[in-house]
Image (cartoon, rainbow, N blue to C red; front, side, top):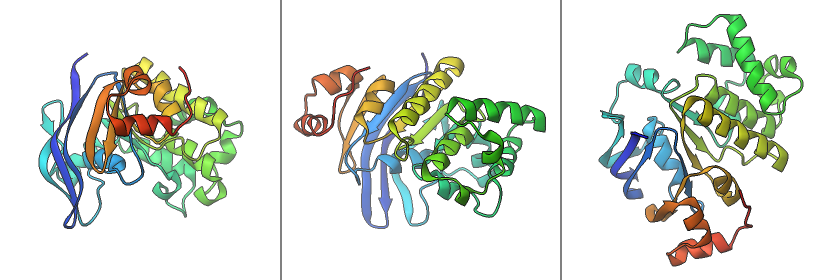
Length: 259
């Protein structure tokens, strides 16, 4: 497998405060990397930086993020739009906030797909229904004809997974993608992300506090504490025999869920 994404000594600041410092890692094609750590450790900040989604007041103060050999930093809006979607897809922690509240879900999904792919309405309907079915929906037409506020938090989250997967991105960045789902739907979402990886050789970076999800999905785990990498390695090794004291405490604080 060849390397597809690399973070080279990345440091990110919010104003004068350093959120993450000297972060270096890479991910290969078809690989799944789990990023774990306590709230405020910088997990979400790391993946948002790749898509230019840090927001006002935040900046990458040093280092680079490379998609293959192309820097993802300081891109124009036009260049960023070409990358976000077909190359980099994002599943947000609170999917409802990424939808326009006054437009129906189906129209927004269709518009997003049309912005990057030459598809007919019929092709879109087929694709979106396949994904909705796989994520446990049984009333697809109602979902697509609903406004975001008419869906529960769990439903919004599953629709967010569908939105990210519509374009089969090369890299899927998942920010706590299962946080609003019950256990059954969590499993379906994990299985669907794994199916996308296996079918399209998609690389996935998943940020989560759920060690069970990471154990079920990730090839490798990166452990963060206060914006710094504490430990990184093979999933089984990190979960079953971590070398750093912080990682030991982190793993001991959560239930063990075997693959």
